[in-house]
Length: 291
Image (cartoon, rainbow, N blue to C red; front, top):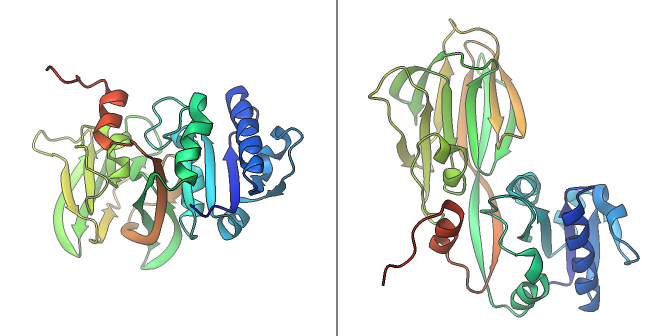
């Protein structure tokens, strides 16, 4: 693959990340790549020529971004990098690592495959969320995994209504609602009892959080739908919308939260040999072949 300029992104002051970053820097410079390093970890690179810059700069200039860390690090970088024409791959220095394929012990071997074109580039869509008050946009952001409406206090119920493309679906009393992408179906949505959705499906997963009725169940809808959550005015004022558990938007009683499929897409790179069901088996402890 023609990766002439490569960006390095990671979690600062983490021993494992530090080691992997320096292995990556040497590998990439030996390949003749121009090296851009996120400014928060620039000091981690020891004795290797590089340029320190922010995520936007990496998105604009680099052909490939390598994220060293767990899924949280990947999500934070992806929300910015998805706006640009750049491929992204992850080195797993976290726990589960659904989005970070490369094993820290096999960095050179896995990157050899990617640079030789023996890889799969997969498009993952994002969500755009906006909080509206009296039909006026008050705040907005994006999410790779999920958008969650929840109470600011633990174990507090709220009342809200759900609309799909303007059509009333249901009203609910619960702790909130998770709206996840297929990418996020193995994250918070899964913990809440939602189904796993293959990444290629153009769908959204709506998962109620501790609903006050046994008949309330997750529902899968077309990803091109506009999902609207209208918060009842009887709620308290301590409500929030979170994006990937990183970004928090305040919500007041009477507000409307609108969620749409983003035009931005994350170009996720997988080395040769990647298989989604192998990832599920390994990460979730599913059984292997019997015969």
